[in-house]
Image (tube, rainbow over all chains, first blue to last red; front, side, top):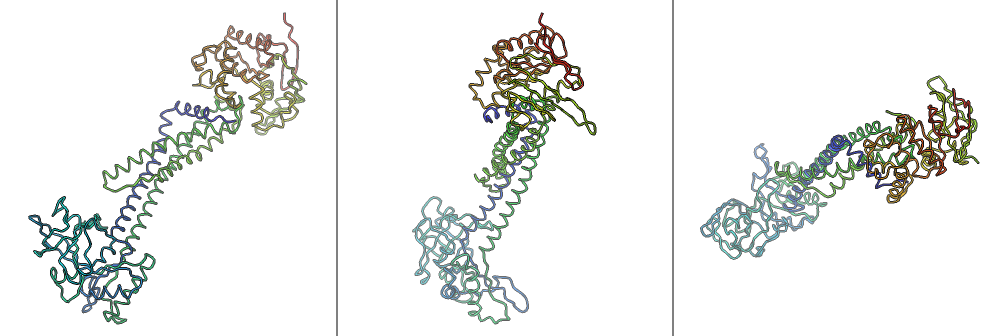
Length: 409
Length: 230
């Protein structure tokens, strides 16, 4: 029968005899496993960033922009014609069943002052629905209400960046700030959201009731005008249904004939981001696949060295056979040697892969995520490579003729 | 029943188109406890015969019974099992594993017999002691003289309590003084432990240690005679 501890000890001794050769053979696996882990980490890091950005934007999100009209034969870009109104927003919520929430937006840049601190930031006039649409919780205080919107109250919600710049560590709730010299009471603070997919600081913002923005801050060319309408669909599956319903409704409301171009644009942000996420995943897979090739090459290196080793040790194999080693005694000895090479290499490769990911993060500034799953896979795969590429040399060794092997010089 | 019974053994090698008749109808039986020397010039078939006796090779035709078992019908692993338990080999070139201590070399047959590590060590130490190498267990082959290496090989051949020792020119690489020591050790094992010793040699003074000399020539067994001890 096969005696595992002794066989392992014998294998270690055989590998120690040619330290340099064993180390170089392992290097193939080390690089392979390290590359697989680092590449998967880079891919996972990119995916995670995009996923974070998607969730920071809000899920199932549609954005309605005015414009895309034809004016005198010239096609205008989206957002060039102020055509969306509060009425549109209310109608969408009421008449499109696939829509769960809407938030009209009228925004602009304004100077904000608190005490002797001042700050310039984007001020967003909107409705309470905005916090739902963008999945944006409050850090403290309360949101403004439908009543605030109706009566154009001078209240506001501050983003974290604005709080930091105006108040420092102080709690701003209840304090009065001036936006374009008009006093606003801070009723709440938005939770931190970080960067948008476009790299903007989403926390550098102030929310005010949309009516207040229209009447007091930015003014409008016609009453009730808004710049953007954000729409949250009921679910990801019905988002395109919502898109169709909105288009139909607005065509009706804006009296656009069948041959005319729409004077608005619906953008499916979630879909856009999901496409980005998909392509990152494909990227990650590709990187992993390329790295796996190096693991394969490492495996071939092991096979090469094991074949050399079998030839070199033909006489030893002969002695073992004469003394009573059976087919599997010989095979197992060489397979275990290959396995030890690949597993030690795999272990070192994990360390290299993890530190490599850290270095990539440090040098290139890419976020990397080393998942335990990728470690298990890479380690397991290196073991499989060892067994697979160790088997042929072991098989060859076990088929040697003991008489010939004993005579081998 | 004899320990070894060979009936009309034929061994034919093919070298390209040429058939080489290495053994022609060799019949022989060896009793338990015998001490046999096989002699003959090179190419006479004596090594081929030894390989068959040692279950390293199978006859092309004829029957070889070892302790009544027909070895001809066994597969590779079964033959390996027989070599492990029934036969101890001693070679001209010692054939110890390099970079492996004497005790581990002696343990090797037990390793393939599935004997646990502690027991292996005890048996190996006892075998080393019986060949006069007490305290040398940790030495590697390259730290031992030729005579000592051959003693390690003998210990390895003994350790599984095999009833047969096959020695293929065991003194070929040794000086005459050491040769005599090795032959005396084999004689002692043969007399005291009732181990059957079969040795191949072409030196008459080595063959003189045996009780029976068999001569081969051109694949035929040409003489089989008792040694008259003076």
